Image 1 (tube, rainbow, N blue to C red):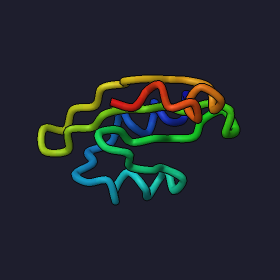
Image 2: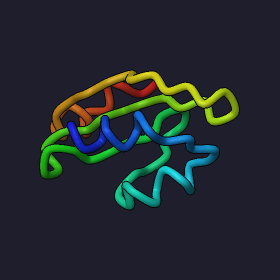
Image 3: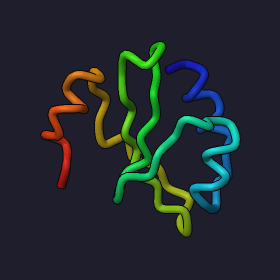
Length: 73
């Protein structure tokens, strides 16, 4: 999580493709970017507005909770 925070704080991502460069396991599940953290034990789910360059953390959950799908809009 610390590594992700340090990268995201300096980032000026303009697209999901740019997020994939440092985080190749990232997936885009509208409207979230889904990132594996903690050795694939957890999911970090930021929502990124690329045009405004704003990032909101919408969820952090265990892999088990993520698979249940309760986070889906």
